[in-house]
Length: 312
Image (cartoon, rainbow, N blue to C red; front, top):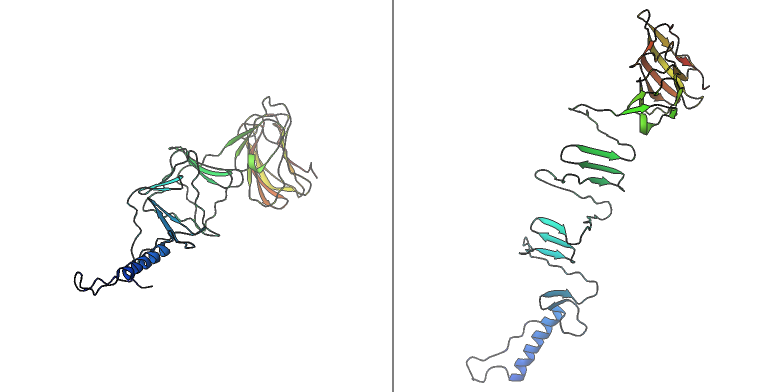
């Protein structure tokens, strides 16, 4: 319905205007249409309800859409409080509920994109957690800690540049144990049987071609032997080690046999006769470890091969 204007005549009391009843009918119809559009006080009407300082919807589960024309903006001059839980204050978004999370949840496969002109700042001792607290990046203002309950994979198509030094963890092995990826791979494993007089047998994980490296350094000479062996008879050890004779000050290279699967440093003839003796085993293929090392045959002993096929 178009707006109905009340005819008021050409001049006061000239008798040309709308009769009183006609005029008020027009007024009533105009107001009825306005209220119907707003959804107020009209039976069966649905829409916007304005009550005091509250704007609401009279339609169940309906949205309220504020849609400016063209490039117009919706401008809110004061702070905005959402559902008594979220406060928008200028450019800051904060929670009004103690210890409550603020969740950003895109639909489907949508991303959350952070676009900043400078840094994204995270306070000290507050971490970025991925998954269920299994992986975390956290700084304390000085150090940056990256922690994972599983593998930490760094994948890049270019060169990885580390400008500082890399500090590897030291692991002291004082008794018979199973060597594992989590505890021993990529670390410096010290062979340190406390009294130097008890057999220490170390069993490597099955070789799968993982590329993992297991480095062992003698920190305590053990005349009852450090024995490093493969997981089962399907694995072998290939390569060679250099063995220095402390008496003759001469060096001999010992090469593995086709079935070698055990390395024994007995503290005398087959190496392990000096602190600092080292061997490194690398998982290079399924059922195959590669070995390299520098060992010392203790004074008063004659060099002998450290390799045997004790497992097979």
